[in-house]
Length: 347
Image 1 (cartoon, rainbow, N blue to C red):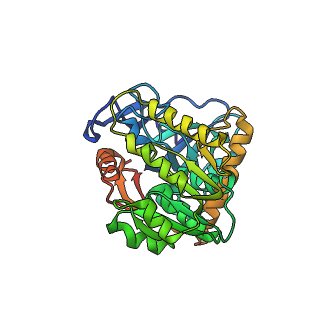
Image 2 (cartoon, helix red, strand yellow; image 1 turned 120 degrees about the vertical axis):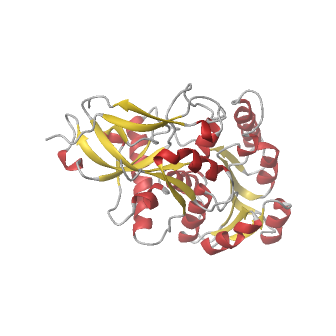
């Protein structure tokens, strides 16, 4: 007897609205095609991407209206043809970009990554897009080695707190920026905190007079110059966002294009330092390799979480129907870790 529901509850972003403009709706679930699986969503995160999307500022977001939700953790309840039956009942993670703020979602089975049974769904969710991003920037892009020093902007945030923990687990010294109220949380993760409201560059130089081996910057804007100048010889700047411009008027792609241009310019100079822009979707043209990297990298992160090396930073668990409250809290800048959307009790 099929357990497949006929409808899904989902949160729709109808346009450029305040968080309270999100809409709780229902839609008919499509039939499963070959290679597909139905996932009952148990956790989906609120990332900076959704904060930009509601402003129409995410670089390649779809046209309004759409369902946000960059990633999820859930359980497979039904499968289509040509899918291994062992997947039914398995807890999995998926990177979706959109669609995760839903009670149920049809996904390609090839995009589902196993989640260790020891992990709570909300805890595991904090490591999906955050864990992949942090792992790949640290180990695939910057290739930071044991004993080196890095600087992490926003070390109390979702990606930042994960990046700090991964670096410390690899024997890397971390300096991280945060507000004064979150300095203790950053220190507890193993990083040396600096106050982002002060002269960040000066504070970092006081802790690392010779420069740092890598900087991870999601802020962008004019401050990207300071990030590059903090690098030691042969150091690497990894930019992965333009948070400082999220409220700017005008073309949403312009800040990113300006950042690309600046990074490319630095890479033409004989300064022995490197600059990269990290995009989690880069390389998707080779879909097999893309999926293999995601599965490999997230698998490593989830194993570290399951054995207690990494600790999930769940800022709050908020029911799906209250997604507006979840987005408001995430945008407040007052929390450490990630706000997670979980099912309503009746769903």
